[in-house]
Length: 124
Image (tube, rainbow, N blue to C red; front, top):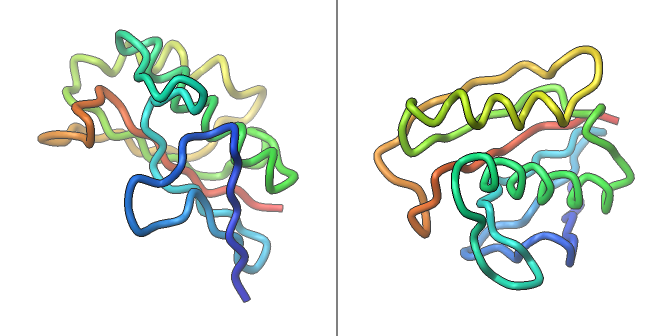
């Protein structure tokens, strides 16, 4: 059985998908753009955008009763690999101890011309 997870503190889905789905003790968080749920605006620069994407993930996980420490895998989509260092510096501050497994890839474009989008899988 699957359960839809939705946080009002993270931006709503901009298409036919859920912010997150829980199934069998695993929470699959959809890619989070760096959009502030209150203002609807995107943060400036890669550091601000990475921070906002990770904050959106944190809010969704909190809605599911989980924390960033429960993440086992992330995928980071970057507009360009030249943004990796800036994203990585912010990303490192969101985890204590063992980091989750991660993939980071450059893509041709992201929705709303974002610099970064991050998705994850967390486990209870």
